[in-house]
Length: 84
Image (cartoon, rainbow, N blue to C red; front, side, top):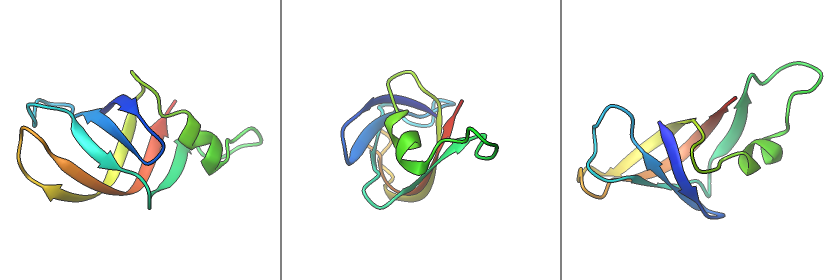
């Protein structure tokens, strides 16, 4: 999945594979953030990972799809993994 744009508690996500006709609105207010790779001496903290969610970046989102409408999907995220 690819991030389109972000605010402090949510972001729009262009879903990979054409499964939706519009970007998904992702509520990240209750999500944990993790960078990949997440280990090693220079591993970023969760707060540092959260700031790396930017337009054009790659993220994986785990959570609940609260609206299945392909034209305006809504996701309540529980975990977001920011790809390097």
